[in-house]
Image (cartoon, rainbow, N blue to C red; front, top):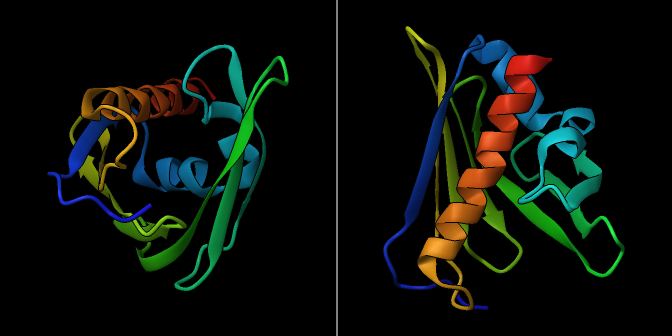
Length: 141
C-alpha cells in the first residue's frame, strides 16, 4: 500500500513513570507482548526488536480465538535514546515516537501516516487504545 497524502495522525498519553522505564517497556519484547493489543479479545503472542538504526521490529497481533493474526513489522530509521524513535512500516508509512519528561511523568507522542483502507478515526482510535494499554501496563508493573 502506498503512503497516503492525508494528514498524519497523532496520539499521545502521559505515563506516571520515569522516561527510562517508559523507554524500556515500550521497546523490550517481553513487555510489548503484555500491552500491545487493540481490545481485550486480541493479544501479541510474539515480539522481537533490534533497537538500532536499520534494525527490524516485528510484533504478531492476533485474535485470542485464533481466527486472525498479522505481523506488524518495521525498520528503525532514527533512535535517540529516551527521546525519540522513527521507523518505517513495511508498507512504507512513517512513524515518529517522542518521549518527553514532564512534571507528571513521561509524555509519549506517536505521529503516523495513515493507511488508505480504514477510516482515519478508526485508525486514531486503534493506536490510542494500544497506547492507553501501554500506559496502564507500565504504571501497574
